[in-house]
Amino acid sequence: MDGNGRWAQRRWLPRAAGHRAGVSVLTPLLETAGRAGVKTLTLYAFSTENWARPESEVKTLMKLFLETARQKVPELDERGARLRFLGRREHLPASVREAMQEAEQMTAANESLDVYIALNYGGRAEIVDATRRIVADGLSPDEVDERTFASYLYAPDVPEVDLVIRTSGELRVSNFLLWQIAYAEFYVTETLWPDFSPQEFLQAIESFASRSRRRGGV
Ligand code: IPE
Ligand code: MG
Image 1 (cartoon, rainbow, N blue to C red):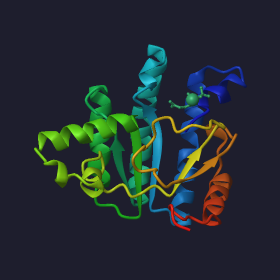
Image 2: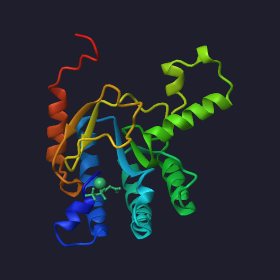
Image 3: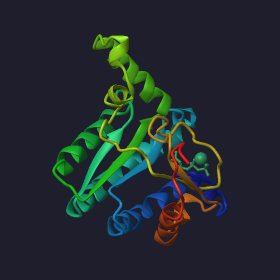
Image 4: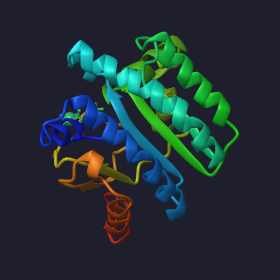
């Protein structure tokens, strides 16, 4: 969900206003995802690198997360979405961790759409954390194959990613789902996240649907 800052800057608004505008596109997008038959959607909300931002912006983002969770989790629950989080929880404020747990519990039995929020998430951190747990479990080298490794990731049932949508025109991966995107297709758009519309979301899905995925084959 990139481009909130630039969206605000272009309007001479504080960055916080961009983050707020970014939140407001979530409901229509999730609705569209459900209608389009998307089964799993992951939103990159806060990376392990985002702590490098000014303390005031980090605080704003955490506050906004709490506010958004309070408002949107019941809404998502009603729509049958199951919410889960990816990332290192231990460094997050207690209030945020509690809200995460509550959201997961409230929506655990839902089945229509899986929504993952990557929060304090880093792809490298995920791989390191998985490796640590493999070592702690005492697995022998020949027990570790791709399937076993994947079962140690934050959410083992996150399927292989089909499509990564990157807003704000950046041509980089930014530590997002490194393991899971091995064969993902990319859709990069100049659109800033707060302007990302359901129409463009459908356009991205259409673009994905027209590609031939060979996965190293012919
Ligand atoms: C939102 O966009 C990403 C979050 C960390 C919430 P940015 O804040 O990175 O926006 P730009 O890149 O400065 O435009
Ligand atoms: Mg950015």
